[in-house]
Image (cartoon, rainbow, N blue to C red; front, top):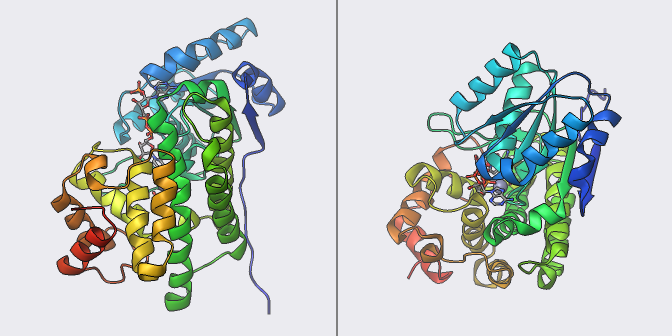
Length: 353
Ligand SMILES: NC(=O)C1=CN([C@@H]2O[C@H](COP(=O)(O)OP(=O)(O)OC[C@H]3O[C@@H](n4cnc5c(N)ncnc54)[C@H](OP(=O)(O)O)[C@@H]3O)[C@@H](O)[C@H]2O)C=CC1
Ligand SMILES: O=C(CO)COP(=O)(O)O
Ligand SMILES: [Zn+2]
């Protein structure tokens, strides 16, 4: 008897393009969100976007509560929940990079309230996904949450963000290649839940981005357009799978372990990009796609070495040899690499000297 069922949650409105930040009130109205919103933002995004959006709301007779968060933490999520309850707000808007958006996403999930995402940086695919990632004890990877009801991504805002945030978003997408390889491997070896649609969408997203890599250049608004569309698509793949599997394999384990060993050393996307070079080598050896991944990252100015990440070689080796332990997710790392093998892959791929 056929007993499968699935529940795919996706954003209802995805609004991307030049000047769309002026349409946040319309987007909220179209979703029939009523009452008072709480804006979750961080210092720079507040100046760049949250204050101008608040002025729009005020002009429409709506008085938003604004909370500025400095760091991504569970305390910050708690603070938002308390403020939302005290101020009797009815929905949340996350305005900023991953920090503000994830805090809003996690708080709205807890409050069972609607939430909209207004990214000011195209830095990773969490801006649209159904996953929330806030450091909790030793945990750095994302957990299940709900996707935003709407995403409003203004390319003129994204194009003015520091260039490295955009290259980090690109690298997060390029890493989908190895994430999907790991997912297929886990399907073959461990019979894990697998979605061919989500895997194909995730791979295709990476292919389209790499195919357009020569259009991804600093100061060009079209770059923000290309990267944000890829981030949306990757987020949708995660929502279809109801898992981060299509966009997160061993290269993400490597990055999460670096975050534990050396917090804030480098951006998420940059770390997963370097991880992806090495795990592509583990999958395909010398003739595999590791060079293509390396060259794609290089062509958009993303780091390809430990030195470019600002992380020393020994930390890279420690992360490689221990990261299989941090989550129950089978990947090409299997039950772990030994130090010699880790040194070999990191050296052959030029990640360490
Ligand atoms: N949900 C998911 O699946 C994922 C979530 N994450 C999470 O996302 C977070 C990292 O995201 P990331 O976006 O890199 O971090 P932040 O939100 O901290 O943003 C990075 C930096 O960019 C600044 N910034 C943002 N927008 C602009 C802008 N338009 N102009 C100038 N500066 C800007 C921020 O300023 P300021 O310091 O003033 O805030 C901050 O210094 C982490 O908390 C991580 O756990 C990461 C990957 C996946
Ligand atoms: O960053 C992500 C996808 O790009 C989310 O992956 P994790 O579930 O490993 O945190
Ligand atoms: Zn990622």
